[in-house]
Image 1 (spheres, rainbow, N blue to C red):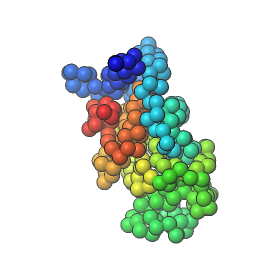
Image 2 (cartoon, one colour; image 1 turned 120 degrees about the vertical axis):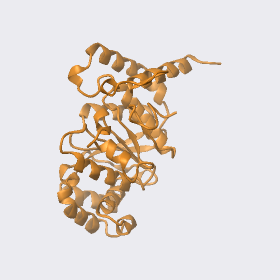
Image 3 (cartoon, rainbow, N blue to C red; image 1 turned 120 degrees about the horizontal axis):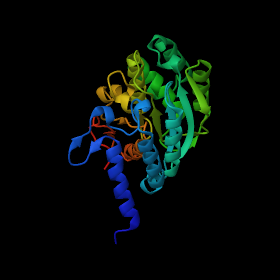
Length: 290
């Protein structure tokens, strides 16, 4: 029997697709208006934004229920990420049944390529016995492997002494800042980035490299950001254009309420071993995972 919930989820999927920039039956919408409330929020119609927020709020539970049951998720942020978007993603992760282990910021000092040698030194000294650190062939591979040992694992487990030692070293070096220090190691990470801004291309390359290194642990990493993050200079585009494009999932619609639902559906796809790129018409996987 076709249930009311089935109809609700089907309708929600259609509207999420529209909000993400896909006009069903007629191809991609214009890039400048491919997300409700996306891009320049000063040009967004408040009435449309209100509808989109309200609809997403009513349908999120039905779409997300048990999608991440049994998974633990670490939320990583970078300077410039919208706290409102982060909060919405965290709330949706919990709706999906995930244990959110904590929230950690990757600081400007870590993401500035000028500080690469310092960060690499912290990684190699604090995580000298971690196999992934010694085996990595590049600086950000070593840095990312050390961070992965500090924050992630193949199973949800309490943070052990090695993890705490690495965290302490990175914190004291002002490379990470823990808004909510994780008590447990997470099975995957969602890295929330900010919009593309002039002069951030170098930082975006570093974010992509770190995401690739983190992806080797547990169920891997999803990098998510607003629509402009998938344009030139943005972190999502850097991931999609980089060496880890087929392994690290990406979403570029976190600046809409429906996009934050898509973010969690994408995290579930990543956890199930089906990485992809979803969101606007710049996304090869379409509006949302199938």
